[in-house]
Image (cartoon, rainbow, N blue to C red; front, side, top):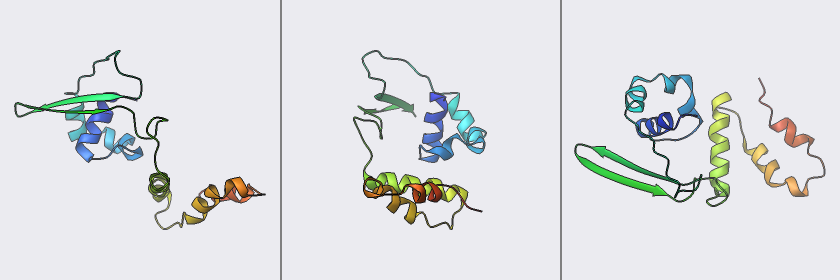
Length: 126
């Protein structure tokens, strides 16, 4: 993955998800133009899941840092965030599919005697 692309796509679209790595986003002229302006510098003081960003625009610098990436062990996603991420991903293959039974089956996995239902729910139909 390209850090330059990820930063440019996030700034242009306001999101940092799977859709930001599609061919359409990679080829988006606005993302391409911004991607050429993104400079990456490694800093050994940061862990591999941390990031600091300085953005300079119109002569002003904006800074942001994150000690741990969302979804990392140090900054886990909430159950609701995980469910929302699955719903968003499922919408990509069938916007009308009811993903709730899969979500329910995942949360009941520890008490389930038969995981075959879970496996069948995880396969897109159609």
